[in-house]
Image (cartoon, rainbow, N blue to C red; front, side, top):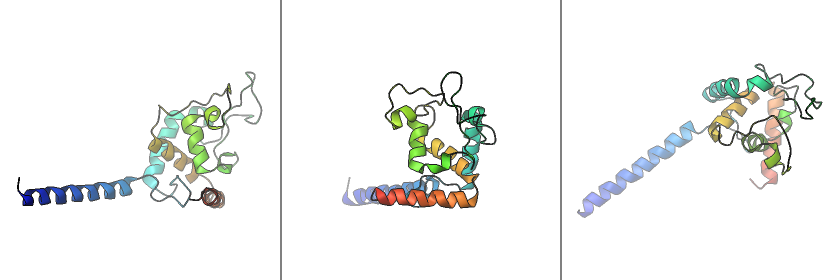
Length: 165
């Protein structure tokens, strides 16, 4: 191959990489998230995807309207906690995006390093992709009143600043 062929191949590879990077930014579920945040409650496509994943994987315990199970603050007859609500009446919004993502992906026992902790909540690490988890959590956040979303965004920004990000 001559020098011109190598230059053309290099230019083509560079252009391909730029297109791939542009597509990644365009479709990246966290591209419109606030600093320190993972979720995109303002992205209609991500929220719609999250709503369908939530309906299929979460609603049976957390409720079709994110209302959680009855008496969710008290242990049940098996000594475990019922599913909490994810609407504004619950405590979901009291946790950062990062922590909510880790709890969903890895479970409470692993995230909080609690050996032998029993819960009904499945670990989604091998069930949902990171993008699907982020979509579900984006959907949940999209249902919160604006005031709570703003408080949650502030909490995420403070956590990111504390971590040096």
